Each structure stands twice: as C-alpha cells, then as structure tokens.
Amino acid sequence: MSSKNAVYKLVNKLEDLKVLEKDKKGRLIPRSIAAPVKMLGTVEAGFPSPAEEELVDTLSLDNLLIQNPEATFLLKVSGDSMSEAGILPGDMVLVDKGETPKSGDIVIAEVDGEWTMKYLKKRGESVVLIPANPKYQPIRPKKELKIAGVVTAVLRKYR
Amino acid sequence: MSNQPLTIRSWPRAILHLDADAFFASCEQAIHPELKGKPVITGKERGIVAAASYEAKARGVQRGMSLYEVKKVCPDVVIVPSDYETYSLFSVRMFGILRRFSPDVEEYSIDEAFVDLTGLRRSFHGPYGMIAGNMQETVERELDITVSVGVSLSKVLAKIGSKHNKPHGLTLIPGRDIHLYLEKLPIEKVWGIGPNTAAFLGKFGITTALQFARKDEGFISKHLSKPYREIWDELNGRSVYPVTVESKSSYQSISKTKTFTPPSGDKTFVFAQLSKNLENACIKARRYKLAATKLILFVRTQEFRDSGVELKLSRPSAYPSDLFGPLQKGFDHIYQSNCSYRQTGVVLGDLLSDNNVQYTLFDDTARIEKMSRVYSTLDMLSEKFGKYAVHHATSLPTKLQTQHEGERGDVPQRTKDLFKGENKRQRLGLPVLHIKV
Image 1 (cartoon, rainbow over the protein chains, first blue to last red):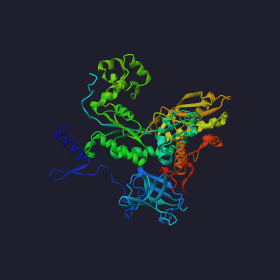
Image 2: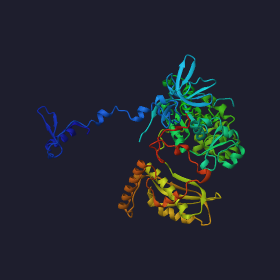
Image 3: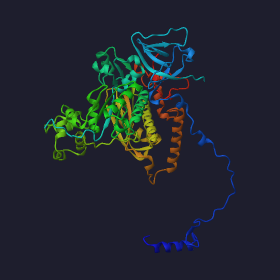
Image 4: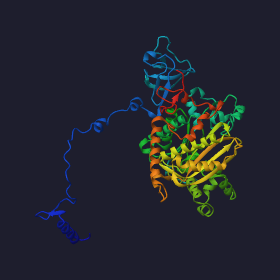
C-alpha cells in the first residue's frame, strides 16, 4: 500500500465488516475476526507441574560421578589393599586421567614396574603410597613412579 | 626463484589436522599398559593385520599382512582381537577434547580430525603453535595415546604437516615456509592426487608438490579439472576446502560385511550371513532416516574370488522384509554350490532421506505403513534390550556357528569380563583399563 488513501479505504471496509472499530478520536480498536467460540465448561487449574521448574538444576548419576567425561576410565579391582577405604575386590572404580594427583588422593600408579592402587602421600619432596589394609606395607618408589590416574569414585552394584 | 615463498602472508587461515598414531594399536596399549613398548597388532579375528603399533611397524609388520607372516617376521608380536567398541569410545573422546579448543571440528574419520583455529590466538593469548601443542598434550594425557598434528593455511597443507613427522609430531607450516615443505614432497603424496594424476603430471616434468604449486594459472586451467585446481590453490596457501563441522549425519551408501571362519559352502548358512548383513545395514539406514534405492550384494570365496550383483529397487526402503526378495534373487544368481565362502557383504546405495520417499500409484501404502510400525517397534526393542533382540528368522542360522572358530574366535576382553548389570550386548560407555590392582 503506497498511499494513505489505500489504507483509509481498507480500514473502512474492515469497519463495515465489524473487524475494526473507531473511537471518537479516530483511533482503531481491533475486534474479533473469528466467530465466537462456545465454552465447554471450565477446568480447575491446580498447582503447575513441578517437573520443569524444580528439576532443572538436578544432577544425573553420571554428572555426579564423572567430572571429566573424556578422561574417565573404568577399572575392575582385584586386590584387597584398599579394603579399609571401602574398595573391595570386584568393585569398579572410576579413574580420571585428566586430574592432577594431590596428596591424599587414591591413585592408580606404576611403581618400579608394578601396578598398584594406593593413597598418595606427598611430604615435601618424598612420595609414599599408602595402603588401606594393615596386611600391606607402604611403598616408597625406588626408581620410577608413574601415576596413571586419580580414583574419583567406587561403584558396587548389589543386585 | 626456487627460494621464493609461495605466499608472504603467514596465517590468513589456521587449519589443524590431527592424525592419531597407529590408532587401534595405541588404544590397546592405553587400556593394556603392559603392552606399551611392545609390538602389538589388532585384527586377530580377521586373520590379517588391521593395525600395527609403531614397535611392530619397526619390525617390518605391515597392514594387511597375514598373521602367519607376522609371526615369522616378528615372533614376539602380541596379537589382539579388534575391540571396535573401545576404539569408537576413544574416537568420540578425542573429538570431544578438540571441541574444548574450537567449535569448528570436522570428524574426518575415526582417527583423524580437521580443526579451524583461525582467530583463536586472541582467546588463548598465544600463537597457533601453542594452541596446537596444548591440544596435542591434552589428547595424549587424557587418552594415553599419541597423535600427530599439522597446522597450516589449508587442509591439504595441514595434512602434509601432520604426516611430516610421525609419531607424536607437531609441524607448523606458516605461509612463508610452505615451499620448504613442498620442495622434497613427491606429488603423489599430496592428499587427493592419485597415481594416475601423478603420472599425468610427470609427463610435464612435475614430480614434486612444489613444482606443481609453482605452475601458473594458465597451465592449471588448460590441463586440469576443478578438483586439481582446488588442490593447487590449497598448496599455494589459499584455503578452498572448508572445515565442515557437522558430525556425520548422512551417508552416500552404507555397507556391512562380515568374514567367518571356517568358510562355508552351506547355502542356507551363507544366505543367513547376507541376511544379517542386510539387517545390520538397514538398522543403520533407519537410524539416519535414510532409504536405499540400490542394493549391492557380494560374496567372497575361500580363494578370495569375489562375485557380486547390483540391483535397482522398485521403491526406496530400509526394511529388510522389502529387500529379502531382491536379496534372494541376487544370491541365487551368484551362488555356486561347489564353492566355499568366507565373507559376505551388503551395500545399500543411492540413499535418500526417508521423508523424501514418494510412493507410486501401485504401492500398497497400508502395508508400508504397517511395516514402518513393525520396524520402529523393533528399533525400540533393540534400544531397550540390545541389538538383535528381535531379528528375522533367515538370519538365525548365523548362530549355528560362532563368528570365528578356533584361535580367530577370540573376542575382546571387554565383552568377556562384564560388570554386574552389563550384558553381552550392552555395556557401560566407558573404556576399561585392564590393570590388575
């Protein structure tokens, strides 16, 4: 529509069809285009479902257990050297290769050619690997210590 | 002239190519740390080398060698069955790590990726070499495999970079150095140049990538078609091929093949193998919402002779029950009763998106509708209970014989050593470290 006149004519037509109404100052008031709809009784609206709003901020078990999805591996435990830390033979542990091992972490490490799972304890320059079972002795690496990852969780399924 | 750079602009674009070193074998060494430093090959179930670790390659082992030959050249080799589930998990993680650095990651193959780094120097406060180094270091630390990386102005050049120094290489080729890398590179080593093109270029005295890159535009447009002109542009540091970001969401064709030992001459059994190939291919086609208009089937005899047949389908479909008719017809055509077969395969070709499928006047739409309901239920069952929870009876005879008998029947440790709650078909989606602690 390139002219005011074209708009004026159209508006008049719509006014005739009762789609629009003009007030005293000539401002347009829209009326309904559609035919009126019959009401089919009313519906009680209770509290809105809690699902969406309240559950937005929950964690899945995956998110809780796995901080670093690209660097987390499974490992099946066979020994009992960490039994007092609650890790038993047959348990699964999650091992994170992306984390930097800190003193106090449980780590999977290769010490002088042997693989082991122990508490890592750093005292200044020296490093000791400490078992959680009195049957075993702490290990002090003689030549080489390679840490393959940090244990971030243990899983045990009962049924 | 020969010392003149091809371009003086250092980094108009920065494209990284990452190529995992001996990927399958490296994955095995990562989950079996006792195999590090040892010659390892995968492919036990196929009877040939699928991948060889660098230690094995150094001893003369090559891809495709028979295991018998391998044991001769390298008696202390460790041979493991392929564990594609683990390799796929590593692959997905590798792409995931790359995406921490740039959103523009192209999954080129299971062990290769292109990444567009252009413009990222600002957010990482450092040069492209540093970003590439960080990417390489992160992949290597978190996945415990090594990767080779090339960074340059185009995909073709980045690929030259990643190949330049393998394994664990990091090669940067800025614009002013391109010519130094192309000078000694045989033309047939360039991505996209095949032996025929190399021979053709040889007729003009072009044997190195640099000689090709230095040719003028007139020569290129006179003698070569568009794809080679694009390679010529890319070699000159003018990026033509974009890094395509979407993860693989569509296919031109889907193929499924399987080798079985011992070979079999039993017609029902061999057809059952084809039937299973077909069911497999259809599952994949339906997952990507595709329908095939062409069906290719082939069989390979014990003597490695192949025969195959290509069939045009009357209507696009991804439902095995539609395709069993043509499959049977094609199989009857190529099957010979006096032969023993070791491998079968099915290819679904000329795939269309399944919502573009037009029905003809004579199609029984009610039946098609019913079939689509049957198969979507079947797909749901597979999702819940694992692949092949329900399958066609024609595939049943495959269960008469394990995939491979004898030594080749060895399966990956992951499928044997299950956690409570896992089953033969469905396992936790995390790689397992096989370390005894």
